View 1 (cartoon, one colour):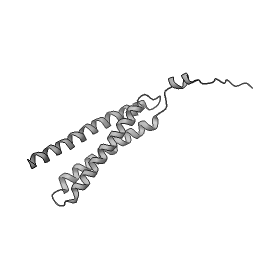
View 2 (cartoon, helix red, strand yellow; view 1 turned 180 degrees about the vertical axis):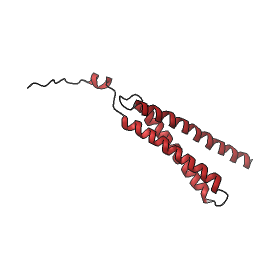
View 3 (cartoon, helix red, strand yellow; view 1 turned 30 degrees about the vertical axis):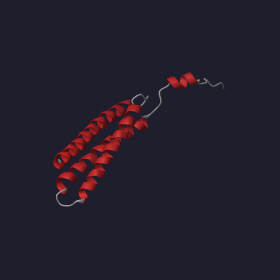
View 4 (tube, helix red, strand yellow; view 1 turned 135 degrees about the horizontal axis):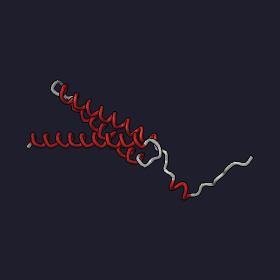
Length: 120
């Protein structure tokens, strides 16, 4: 019984695309959770900020988590786009995380400008 054994060379290993399906799925999951943390921070800020001072701490924490999750999801999704499997999931994760990251940055920047304007 003879097996068809073909030795792999370094050139074959470099040209073969890696399977990064896990990174694509994690990118999409991070996009969803980043969006949920952003929505939670909006609800905390608008509906609970006038009743207690502790809501501002939770707002900052949830906005920070939304930013971190979307940033990591964007990195993982952009790495997984070049993979052999899960390319569609990687594209969806990259698009969603970039949109939610942009919205989060605009929201944080707008809140900073409003705070600066109030102090001025």
